Each structure stands twice: as C-alpha cells, then as structure tokens.
Image (tube, rainbow, N blue to C red; front, top):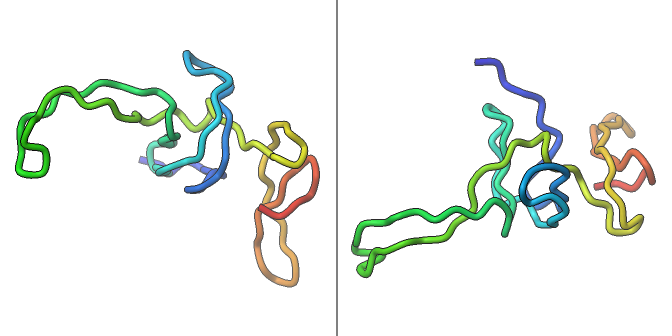
Length: 106
C-alpha cells in the first residue's frame, strides 16, 4: 500500500470542510499517514459497546472519536480566522511548515 502525503500533524487546529460534522473545529489527536486519516477531538463521535474489563469494570456504551478522512479537514489559522493550506518551505537549510495565506510558521 502506498503511503499518502499527509500535511497535517498531531496538535494542529483544523476545521471539518465536508460531511456530517461540517464546520466543527478541533485539534488533531492522532494522524494515520498510511491510511490518510486523522482523529479530531469532538468530531465524528461514535458509540462503542465495551465488555467489562479490569480498567473499565462497569463496561457499557462508550462514546469516542473515530478517524476522519484527512481530505475532509483543513488547517485553521487563528490570526486570519480562516482556513489555509500548509506549505513546506526551506529556510536556512531547514524544512518548515508555513501557512500559505499569511506566511506564518506553524
């Protein structure tokens, strides 16, 4: 399986641009570059039935975040209060991610 190019990283603030949760903002909790998916906090919440374990003796139904396709989220720039694409630039021999609209370092 070919690894997809993923410009988003853990901790980035993103906005969902399509799907049932369109317009919701949240930080990326985990990124999966091989599958091209990300887990965003408080987005795409699912209910999972859990058996009782030592860690969770009660068991029951747990609400948790599920992965979202990375193409359905876009980086959010708080200074501009708008979405933007991250671009990789080389400055003094070091590769850094930069906001395409404002030029701010991420």
